[in-house]
Each structure stands twice: as C-alpha cells, then as structure tokens.
Image (tube, rainbow, N blue to C red; front, side, top):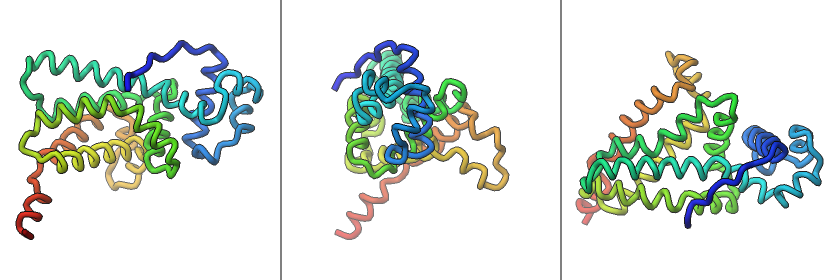
Length: 227
C-alpha cells in the first residue's frame, strides 16, 4: 500500500480536523458526539458531511493528515541512512532513532496540535475498535515492512519470530510514551518539564529499546531447554 499525498486543506476543513483531533483525544471516538464536534469547530453538520461524508471518514482524515507525512518522513530518514551505509547493515540504535524521532518531535508541538495527536495515537492502540485498528494497520503497513526488513539485516542473529515480538514491544513502548507522558508526574523525582522534552525522551528511549532488541534470546533458549 503506497503512501498517499495529503491534499491541501481549506480553513473549514482544518477547523473541523483540529476540533475532532482534540475531542477524540479527550473523549474517545465513541464518546465524541457530532454535536460536540460542530460546536467546537463552529460549523454546522452539513459542513462536516460535505467535507468528510461520515464520522468514519472524518476519523480516517484525522489520522491521515498527520500519519502520512510522519511515515513519509520516517521512510525518507531510513532511505538516507541506508544510502550512507552503502549496503552495510545499520546499527539498531540508528533504526530506532529514525522510527521514533518524528513522533517524539510532535510532543513539543503544543500550539499546532501535534501533542494532542500523539496522545490520541497512543490512546488508539488500546481502543477496542477493530475498524480503527485495521485502518492504522493499513496506514503503517509499508513503513513497518521497510523497518522490519532493516532490523532483520541489522540483527541477523535474532530469529524472525523473536524479532517480530521485540518490534511489537518497541512499538508498544513508544505508544505508551506518546499516550501517557503525564504519567511521569507519578514517578518520584521526575521533572515536569521532562514530559515534553523530545531530545531527552529520544535518547532515553533509544537506550531502553536498543537494550531490548539486543537482549539475549531467552525465549529460544527456554524452548531448546524444554525440548
């Protein structure tokens, strides 16, 4: 599935998407009514229907507005790293940085809505809606396949099934970080300003995730021992 270019939005579309993004983040998809949406965006229902057609189409537009450019930037960074490596496998840390950097940078975007979106994105991964999870799966498919192949070249000693699990855990850790930066307030000694410092988060996450990706293959060892 190829990444689609995002069409320029007019002022009304932008207001509707901004309002939907914030309301979905606060109340969830099912918990947000069209009445709430039209009131916050200062439009009538006809305008929402004209520009997006349905609530499902609006939800897709909310994600596509930011995810398409995000994934395109991830792939561009991966292309750059692979070109510089001239065919050699990339370090796991470099691959992690290429994948997580774009989304972490949005944490600092309080005015442009980026912070709302990454929290919405993190919340979505625990949302029970099969339709939305399927939508995100399609939108991430090309990007995830490229990165999975790059990680496989970087970590040839890790069995494919084990690598899939580790990438799953990596994605889950990133999702929680995006969704629950306020949870840092619950950790003794954490500085409030650290919640939205993308550079510090990036460095910490790369170290943490690299340790997991490079860990001893305990699962395979356990299976062999049992056999």
